[in-house]
Image (tube, rainbow, N blue to C red; front, side, top):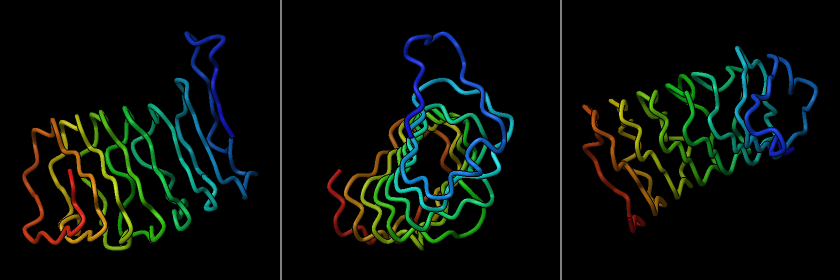
Length: 164
């Protein structure tokens, strides 16, 4: 599903908290326009791609289990943290939260062993980078440019594939 209001780009697309609740098998969600949403209770656990530019909430829904997620692209979002605790993300390869000015910490990457690309460029308020980032053996690209506030970085580095 692609949501885009190119014809009326000055308008904000309004979503209610259960907009996606009946879309249990939704695998691709791309939101390319400004959205207004006070709460979001559900995203399909079948999602492979979540591409939501300027995601308006502080975190992803509590019920969301990203077991099948391959790419999470949410640049310039309002996210403070993706979720609490450890979530299985065995298929996740890409996270792009570039310019998400409210992001304060990264998730635990222990259950995301195949992560290849992590872009946090311009996340100026990030203070805690989870130590599990340092042991991502398949990570090829790590972008922390412009992250001015990290107080905690991984002490153990085992990123064998890191190129940039």
